[in-house]
Length: 244
Image (cartoon, rainbow, N blue to C red; front, side):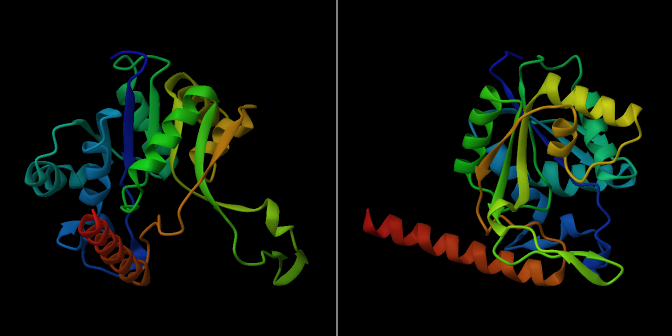
C-alpha cells in the first residue's frame, strides 16, 4: 500500500450489557441493517479508504462474516481480527494485524463499530488533519456544566469552554499510533481512548469539530435517537434532491 493510503480499523468487540438485548448491540437492526454494518458502509463507500480491519470477539467471527460481511457484500474488509479483553487491547490486536501490511505514513482511522452516523465530511477532515499532525480527534463542545466529584461531593467546576466530548473517528499515522499503543502496553497503562495514548507520548492531536448526532449506541435510548437522526438525515437528503 502507498504512503497516501488510509485504512479503517473498526473495533466492535464490546459485549453491550447496557443494551439489555439477547444479542450484542453491534448486530441490532438500525433501519434494516445491523448497526455495525451501517458503520462499516461509511468506510466501504469512501474513496479515501483502501482497506478495513474489523475487530470482533473471537467466538462471533463466523457469525459476523456470514451475517454482516458476506450478507452486505463488503469488499474492503481484508481481515476480521479477534478482539481483546478491553477496547484498547482490541485496537492493538488490529494494529498488529496491520503491521507489515501498511506503510508507516499510512493513516489509520479508528472508529467505533457502534457509531453508525459519522459523515463522509468528518472522515475526510480527520484524514487530512492526521497527515499534518500527530493525530486528529472528532469531538464536540460540552453543552452542560461539568462537575468534578469525590466521594459524592463536588470538588470543582471546570470551565465549560475548554471541555470537549470525544467521539470517533480518531486518525493517526500508523507509526504514531502503533508506538503509542506499544508504549501503553509495555507500561500497563489503560487510556480512555486512542488519542489519550498519543497525548501521553507527547503527541499533538488536532480537534475536528464533530456532530452531536454522531452518537455511540450503548443503551436502548441511543438506538431510538439513532433511528430518529437517520430518518431526519434521509428526509433532508430527499428535500435536497427535490430542490435540485
